[in-house]
View 1 (cartoon, one colour):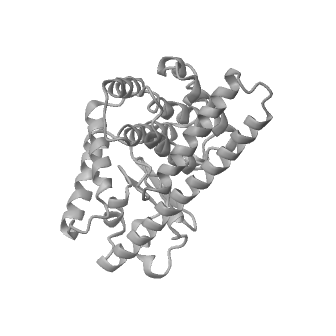
View 2 (cartoon, one colour):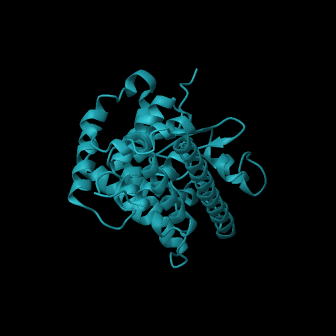
View 3 (cartoon, rainbow, N blue to C red):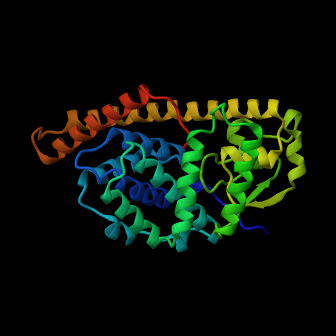
Amino acid sequence: MKEKIRDLENMPLNIKLIYSKILSLMTLTDENYDQLKISKLYTIINKIQLPSMERIQLMKFIMEKEIGFIEISKEIDLDTHLNDQEKNIFRFSLMKDLIIIMKANYIETEDEKRLLKDIQDYFDISKEQLSFFEEEYELDRCFFDDAISDNKFKEITKKTISTATALGIPLTIIYYSGTFKGLGLLGTISGLRDLGMKRRTGKYSLIIGIGTSIALGVITYKTLEYILKVRKDEKTKLAHLMKKNMEALHEATKNTLYKDIEYFTYRMIETKDKNGKYAEDVLKIINLLKRTVATLENTEAVII
C-alpha cells in the first residue's frame, strides 16, 4: 500500500498553525505592522485553509510580538505528524512563503534576513537551495508577461527542473486516481483539480502520457507546459484557468478578512473593560485587518 502524501491544506491543524506562526514572524520584523505583509500572510493561510479559531489564535499571537523563532521552534514536532515527503513539502513551502512575505513591501531589512537565516538553518536549507527559491519567486512574478516567448518559457522550465535536481531538492510525487493531483514544492498550485481539470478527458487528455506516478523536482505554473507539453492555444487556456484560480483565492481571502473583522468587532463590543489591555489589543487587530482588506481591495491577485 502506497504511503499517503498530504499537501499543506490537508495536514493536521496543529501543523498548519505552527506553519502560520512561523510565517507570521516575518510580519513582526517591522516596528509597525505592515498591511502588505499581513495581506500576503492572510492569503497564504487562506490557501492552506487555516480554520477560523486557529486564525484567531494566530492574530492574538501576532499581537504578543515579543515571541521569536527560538521560542516557536520548541513547538515544532513534524516527526510525530508527518512522513518524510510531507516534511519536505512543509519546509520547502515554508521557505517559499517566507520569501513572498519578506518581499511584500519591496524592502528587505537586516532583521528579515537574520530571521530567514535562522529558519533556513533550522530546516537545513542550503544557501543554493534558498537562492533557487528566490529566483523562482522572481520568475513567478513575470509568468503572465507576454514578452516571454514559448522557447524562452520552455528554456526556463527545463532549467528550473534540472537546477532543482542538481541542488538535491527532494522529488515530489505526482499521482492520480481518477483525478490528476500534483503536490508542488513552491506551492503555486495544490493540484490540477484546483484548476478545474478533474479528469483526463477532452482537450487535456495529453496528461495520460505522463503516467500514474512521476517524479519531478518542482511543480510551478511555468513548469506545467513542460509537464503537459501543451500547445500554444492550450497554454493560453491553462494560463486563463490559473488566473481565475488566483483571483478566486484573492476574493476568498478578502471574505475571510471581513469575517475576522466581524468576529473581533463583536468581541470588542462584549468586552466590559473598554480601556484594558485585551480591548487595546482587539482594537489593534481590527484596525490592522481593516488596513489589510483595504490593501487587497486595491491590488490585483498574484501567484502565491
